[in-house]
Image (cartoon, rainbow, N blue to C red):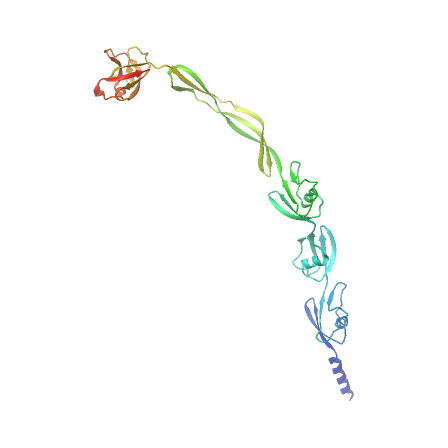
Length: 341
C-alpha cells in the first residue's frame, strides 16, 4: 500500500514538471522543472546569469510545458573611438550591431571578423568626412580635427616650406571638404648648348659677279647654362637661367662674294691638242677661267687659259680636244661661240 502510494506520488511529481528548452548562445539544454518562472527554471538547471547577459523571455515570465528560453552571454569589447577607449558589453557577434547599440556612426578602421571570442578591440574613426589629394593619390578620412593643418598632421601628410595646400592650413574642416596638397620643389641643373656661328660676306673682285666661294667654314661654339627648375607635383613649371659660361667661342663662316663684271665676245672656236680642260687665248691672263657657249646648241663648257692663240682671223679661242667635244662634234672643226670671263 505504501509502495503504491509512493509510486503514485513519484509519477505525479514527474508529470507535474514542465519540460522547457534552454538555448545558451545557441546550444540547447533540455530542462524539466516545476518552477513557474524563467528565473526558477534557469536556477533549477544551475544556469547562472552575469550582469550583462540577456534572457528571453524575461526572468519574471511564466513557463509552461514546451517553453523555449534563450540565454545570450555578454562579452566585453574595447571600443576605440578617435583614440578614446572604453569597454562595452554586447551579446552580438557583429561589429555593426555593436556600434548601433552604442550609437557610434563612423568608419571601422580595425576589428576582428567576429566578436564571439570576447576581449576584442574595435577601432572606429568618426567626425567629418573629407578627401585629401596628395602625392599622386586621393584618400578619404573621417576626422575630428578642427583645421586643415591639424588634419594633415593627424594622418601623417607632412608639408615642407615650399609645399602648398588648398584650402590653407588654418582653414576650418567641414563635412565633404576636398583638400589638395601641391608638392613644390626647386633644384639646379646644368645643360650644354651649341652657340651658332655667324656668316661674314666679303666682296671679291677676282670672282665673277653672282659666284660665291667659301673662304672659311663656320664652327659652332659651346656654352654651359645653369638653370633653377621649379616643379609642381613633379612637373617642371618654371626654368630660370642662373648663369652662362662660354666654353668655346663660335668661329664665323667667311664667304667671298664675286663682284667682277663679266666680259663677253663672240667668234669662232676650234680645238687643239692642249691639256685637258684648257684653252688658248691671245690676250687673257694665264689661268683665267672662260665660259664657252655653242650659240647653235646652247651647250657650254668652262676652260682655263693655258696657251696663246689662235692666230687665225675670225677665231677667238681654241679649246682642248676634251673641252671642244662637250659643246660640239670634233669633226666639225670650227663652231660659232660666245665666250665670257
